[in-house]
Length: 469
Image (cartoon, rainbow, N blue to C red; front, top):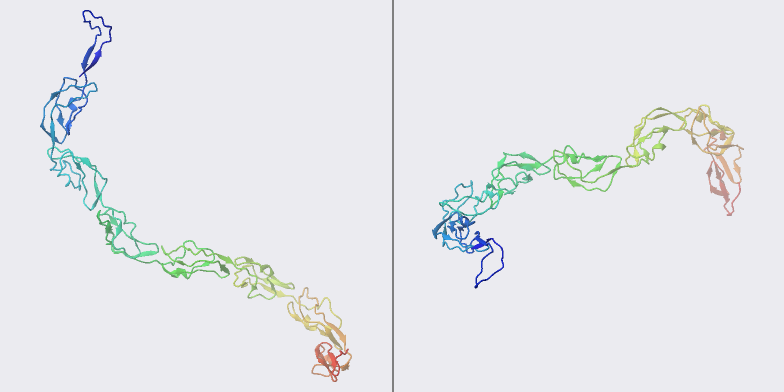
């Protein structure tokens, strides 16, 4: 119970078996710390710090009552521990009167039947959730105790509706606390057509679903305002007349071709919808020219254009533009409508050809204009042996003869080498009445195919050899 305090070792000098203590050693009592045999629920605080020989009277922990025992003199070892010789016995107090300062709504029923030292875990009513799971060890004085759980009761969180109405969105209600106000909305693509009132949701911890008392009715939304982000040159008119749930099949505007796309189901919010078809409209090529070409207009510069590009038609050679303006083409099936208003005035051909042929009469052509057909004729006494009509292109009142017409003198013979040459429907001696309409045909004993405006090839009936003219 004591430890050295002062002093040093010394050399022994023994006389008659005895020696003098020259160490200067002094001892003091050992400070006491804890008992080596503590009793349950006994508080040894009053003994801590005593020294050997001190008087210790242990107490009972809070919530316990001493039923036996007394004080004792401590004898502390080198480590400071000592034997509890008090015989103190502490008995747990009853907790039947509940907490001295109860937390609102907490249920302490299970705790009030316990005694000090036992664990108390208060609970919340079924309509409430616990803020945290907490428990504490009871220490009851006069049958009451202090709540050390830190638990509070909060309204139960509701997570689903018992019977959902069609197309009603309850996300604004789910996870809200019981007793709070909730306003259901409609799912995407639907609108509220009827709603009696906001509702107060109610649920419990054991049943977190709630009743819908709002009488919300949701109907299909209309799409009349069209797509939120329309794609260029797409026709949405048919889909703009539909409601949520209908299938939208799009098309391209006139003059555009559509790629492969997918019809989609409409979801109309605020009378608009999102186009998820993937449609892309590509402008068509106008290679077929105009469906209503203006006389004498030249559209060659517009042949390679596509829908929405600008066409600038010009007037053909031999004409003068009097009106018209560039216009934007819209191709359908490769053709387009000319909306330029172009007008081309053909020039006069009054001065005749710049390269007149011999013995050719151009009277009928000189009275015409660019674009008209010219049929030159042979003058009297001559007949054509080659040539054709042609379309006039007049510049400065003259034109170029490209007919290839050739006229030869008429000899008046009716039969040459088996041919009978005559003006159709008239005698062969009067060719001047229709000089451009003569015909040769074969006469017996020759046969062959007649030829207009040329010599026939005739064969003798008795032989297969070709006979010359």
